[in-house]
Structures are given as structure tokens and as C-alpha cells.
Picture 1 (spheres, rainbow, N blue to C red):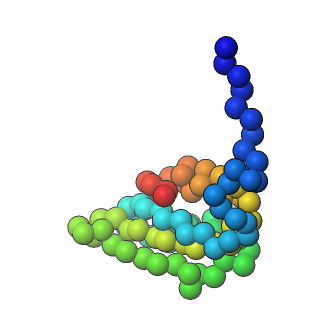
Picture 2 (cartoon, rainbow, N blue to C red):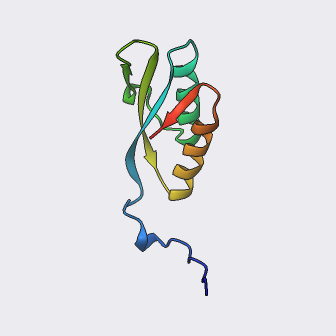
Length: 95
């Protein structure tokens, strides 16, 4: 008999909120990618500081890795941020 999995409680989380949380976003190196990722970060963390962005080009220079560090306040915030970034048409991967 299958029993439903109980919702994750705060005690089950390995992350203690609030905290600084890095997220790596990768996409084709095109105009507007950095601005789009920055706008999404600011929507989820109004205090987001663009100085917290780290950029890294791919070896061939066709892709851009963007690491943003946000102030994470909840699992729900992080889940929705990952969903929003993952569904953006310019974004290929979110880690």
C-alpha cells in the first residue's frame, strides 16, 4: 500500500533561512541574458545587489555562466525562483 509522502517540514531542510544562496544560470551568450537574470533575481530578492554577480564564459565563448547570490528566505521562494529561471527562453540550465 502506497502512503503519501508528508510535506517537508522546516526541520527536514538542510538550509537554514534566511541565508545567502548562490544559483548558477547558463545560457547562450546573447544580448539581454544578463539583464534578464538580474531582473528575475531582483523580483525575488528586492535587496539583490548586482555586485554579487559572477560571470564566466564557456571555453568556446558561446555560452555564459552567471552566478547570482540572493538572500533566500524560504524553500518556496527558491522553488519559484528556480522555476522562473528555468522557464525563461534565454536560459538553458539552472543549478
